[in-house]
Structure formats: structure tokens, C-alpha cells
Image (cartoon, rainbow, N blue to C red; front, side, top):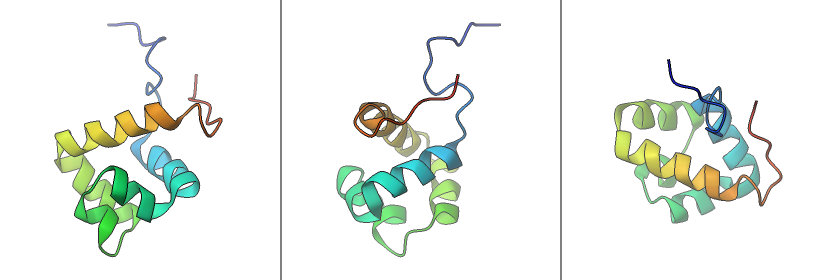
Length: 79
């Protein structure tokens, strides 16, 4: 089993990541930064989760955006 201590996403659920990002960035900014339809057209957590769970490249982009912004908004990754 690999050690995940240094992985800031370890233990962080995708729905929690999305909720924090929506709270701090808003759907419009998220759609600008990661231009995918689930952020641009009638966005919701539910539709975004469904798409991101099925689309690895999009999920990677969202996770990378979260990691870039985590320090800006003082979002503490769970230990």
C-alpha cells in the first residue's frame, strides 16, 4: 500500500472539492478556467459529479485547479 501523506487530495471527496471551488470561485469562473459544459450550461454539483466521474481528463483538470487555488482561499486539505 502506498503512503499518501504528501498527497493533498488524499481523503478529499470530489463533491467536497467542487463545493469549495463553487463557494470561492463560482460557476462562471470555474467554467472560464475549465471550459466544460457541466460548468457552463445549467451547472449543478450533481451534473458536474456525474460528468467528472466518467471523464478522467476533466477530473484531472478540476483537481489541478483545486490544487492551484487551495492556498489562495486558505482551503485546508484534509489530513
